[in-house]
Length: 609
Image (tube, rainbow, N blue to C red; front, side, top):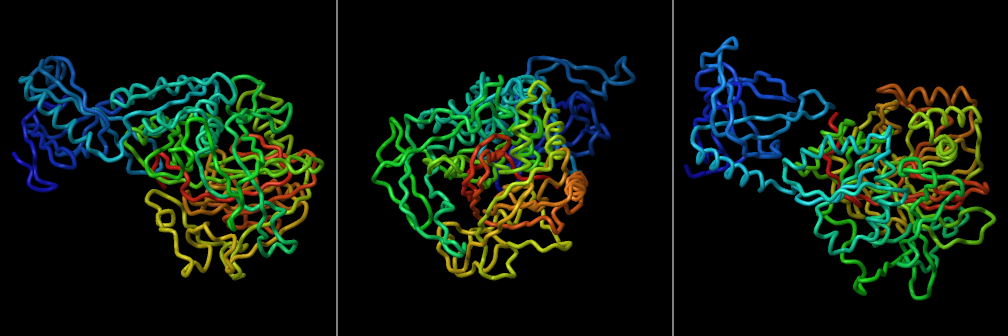
């Protein structure tokens, strides 16, 4: 039958469905439906367990990831008299429809489902397989070819085991995967940063199997020479009162011959991405040749790499087609939890295979000076997808590196030791906010209605507003002229702090179910700047305990300053100022940080809440 409209039947046959018997199967443009001929219920297999469905069930193509021809074999038909209670197995030609069941109660892991159909006529089965493959192949944005990077020793050494669990699902879906198992710290960064643009264009995306640290390596390798944008202004470019930005002529170029890994803190190593203890962090060194200049927006830089044209690399970010995927196997997996709502490898794999897509903000971090005693360093560029933290957060990374033999539990132990020391640091933070003092950039200390980021989030899907209608920081902001916009100003906070953090996303994890900032959005162009002022140890402990409680407000205290901002700068006179970027260490006493709205795309759809 010819298909006349989106919902008219394109094909109809009487087939056998395993566990049900004869069913009428109808194919339409958006899926297929099954109605039993004689039985009262339909069954299907979820994880090998037969479950009963309604009299008629519909299978949407958006939930089908594979169509698989099967060998001649048995179909269980309960309507045929047999020896096992009732029913018997009938031999025939078969094919399978592999799909996903999305639980009604969210967040919850997605469940693999399999429907096995059969018919005595081989041509009938082949016709259905051909038609179904044609329909599913037309599903928009599904990947065909992926580069997969696996950290074998992440978490409790479960990286390889995790990939072996989900690899058959990729094979069933006919997604071509090139798998690389990392052998050392910085290996993933090296692979991605040196990937030729021609090869990068042949991929639909890059998938990491590991923790947030491995994803950070891939992110930095991908963006280090392919993100063509302005640097945020350096701290020295701001007037003494912090109210406006003074342009500086700073020449910055990423050298193709100088992309080796340099340690931010000698003797320390990255917590997630190493297979051994001699980890080095993948920093991008830069130099200052003549010829480049800085526009009003900050430091302009340009990348020249061997094999690229004079106009720069042929693949740049942001773009609309390339996506990154995460299959969780790490210690915390905050990025996966914040972007899908569940920490489940199969769910993440299905998001990738089914072509889910959402934009993600990325924090661009520029180190201007390593220590107060050093001369002005050539800028070092880093990116973070979830969090950038100083003080308590940097000290935890430093202490945990001495305890790598303990595995993931080292973070709990190191956190306890750092908490007991209760160290504070003198620092100066300058952040961007609207001139209007009633702006929502200053989060009031009272119970407020939280707008949680979720699938199809209205905040993240807002188009960037024009300059004329940008009155507050409630919505998304166009950063292209924000540093010179008279409606915005630089404000300063100076003092002793236990910690300084900038959350790009909510940073959910199993210990903090709502995350550090429950209402942080994935793609609104903002950072949540959190400054923990010096306070008695019991007060700080109470704040930490509130993070473990769902529905609490852990930032609603007088010793916490919470600002929503698109950019900030940081200056400290401490000799060993250490930052924690997605679990990676960066020694820096002067940094500038800005939110790059929707800089990368993920194989995700936002948290199901």
